[in-house]
Image 1 (cartoon, rainbow, N blue to C red):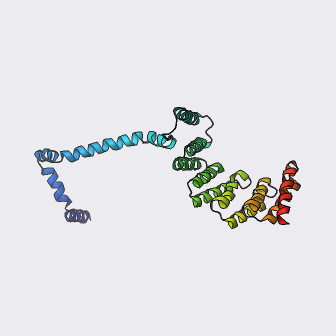
Image 2 (cartoon, rainbow, N blue to C red):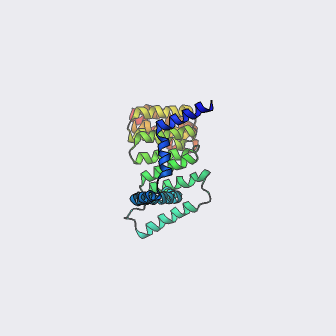
Image 3 (cartoon, rainbow, N blue to C red):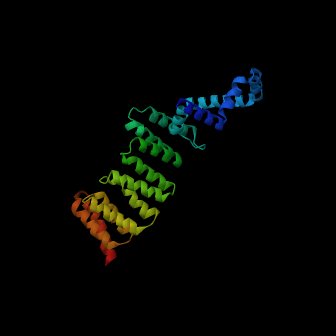
Length: 257
């Protein structure tokens, strides 16, 4: 049995030509090694240099990544005073002790600062970084939606606003921008109306959505009868501003005569 195994091993070694190669290594003169080193010195040098460069990249990449994530690009036309103000705000953000969950707040503020400098691509990158660190915060989606709107990437803006609404369905500041996107940018009045009606159904009694829809109906969709209905609802439920609503109602009634 042992002989059979030994024979099989020798057979496979011979088939793979490993035995001959191993024999050649043991019988090879030392001068061959020196010749080989001489012939391949350039290759060895390149390998060593490449290894050193790779080690350096690994060592400094975290610092590079951090700088890439937090840098700001100040427009060349800014005055010295404006540059100083931007840099001061940037340092304030980086040194803030209230950075939010996993520094998400810091990246959100960097995104806002970049957006104010019209570095919209950099702003989106910062907001995405913030969202990865704290995916439950709707501010980051909302801010991405606003930024995508400035970039005229309306499909991406719509998705971002919808993501914000999913996270904060009861907070009007996170979804009113979607109605504005449909109304003013996409000019899809049918989509805008469906959106406002859906939001009113989900947020019964929310004055902000009622005002937004009344304004949309009157000034954009020019559906004065619809607008009149909602201004009257607002007059009945928001007594602090009843006088303002009364003026709007009076003007609309004249238009409908």
